[in-house]
Each structure stands twice: as C-alpha cells, then as structure tokens.
Length: 291
Image (cartoon, rainbow, N blue to C red; front, top):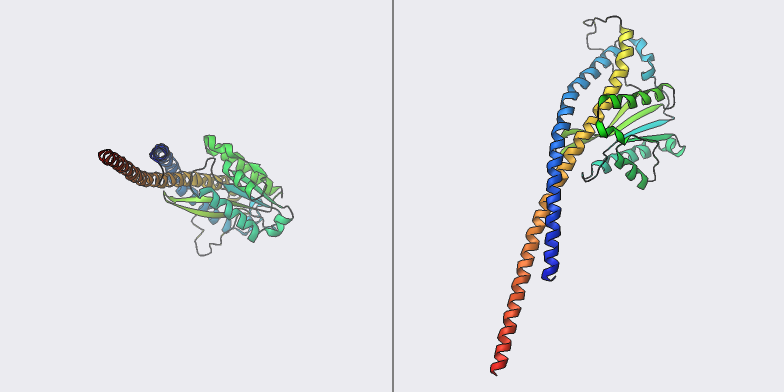
C-alpha cells in the first residue's frame, strides 16, 4: 500500500484535474448553445435551398450540362476533411480521419497510389492525425474557425468550385460530423461536386414562375447553394465538436470524482493502519518496560 504522502499528493492532483475538466465542460456548454443555435437556424434554409435547386435542375434536361453538374471519371479527387482546431473532445476528430483513410483505401486506392488524391483540411487537428497515417495535406484552412462566418467560407467554396470547373479535380467529397444532439454526432460523407441531379418526375413543375428566366436563376442559384452547403457542413461540425467536448469533459469529471472517492477511502484505510501500528508499538514498548 502506498504511503500517506503519496496518496495525499495524488488526491491533490486528481482534484485539480477535476476542477479543470469541470470548467472546460461549462465553457463547452456555453459555446455549444451558440453553435447549436447557428446550425438549427441554418439547416431548414439550407435544406429548402437544396430542394429548390434539385427541383429546378431536374425540371430541365439542358441544365444537366451545367459546369457544376458535369460528371467525369474520378481521375483526380479532392477530399475536404472538417475537424476541430482543439482536442479533448473524445473520438470526434479521430473518427473523421479514420473515415477519410477508409474512403481512400476503399474507393480511391488507385488514384491515391498515382498521387491523384488531394486533401484540404478545415481544423488544425486533422494535420496531426493525418501525419501519423503518413497522408499528406494539400491545403489547411484552420483560420476559418477564428471568426466563423459565411463570407470566409464562401471564399473557400468559390476556390474549390473554380478548381472543379477548371478540371483540376473531377470529384470532390466532404467528410464531417453532422450534429444530431449533444451526445450524438453522425459521421457523414457528402458529395460536393459534381452536383447530383435528382429526378423528381412525380412532382409538378408547372407551379413555378421564373423571373427573369430559368437559366439566369440557375446560374446564380447553384454557386450560392454550393457555398451554403459547405457553410452548413462547417456549422454542423462546429456544433458537433462542442457537444463532443462537453460530453467528454462530463465523463472525465465523473471519472475524477469516482477516483477521488477511491483515493480518500484508501487514504483513510492507510491512516487507520498507521495509527493502529503506532498504538501497537506504544503498547509493546510499555509491556517491555514492565517486564
């Protein structure tokens, strides 16, 4: 059994750790409220915009020739990996990187072997985790989280869209955690480009009036919808990160509390044993003097 000084030192250490994890849990909870509000407000708008885009594009065969919907052989692939800038959020980051590595291995192994798979990372932790897997990063955009807003994301989205239209990449995928609730994040792989055109033949299209015309609306709608799609993915990931960190810090605080109980019990037992030994030594000494 460890001596009393060692146990006291460990109790102090665990107690300090519990205070830190408890504070981090409260900070994550405060950030979560803001991040959750942002994605909850954005999601209906993004989904409705996506429905309108699908409706418009599927209602005219000529729109299949749109530059953003052009289907090509996936000879050159770009993966956009969205994680966090900070750790201490459980397996949040590791799950995204693992999914990206599996995607490369299962779907793009030939392209990767030929050096035709590039990776853009949004979040500092992706670089560290990909480095351990010996996967190189083409571009890092961790500064987006410094002041997360649509303007910053739209600039990145425009750059990616231009690279697709200039045929620098044939297929672009987004990998991120979709926010469900505080404790649940859904790992998602989403095709960004080319746009997948949904066939909604059963829906009526005659109730739409286009002004000035369908072509001009589509030219403006598609780039904007793509920017919103990337922005929503980053907002989803941001809310998921705070939820994952809050959950992780909550579990860490509970574990520290349980460990403190065990350590205090061990300390009390050790102290009682020490007192008993001292009493026995005193009694033994007194008996020796009498004899």
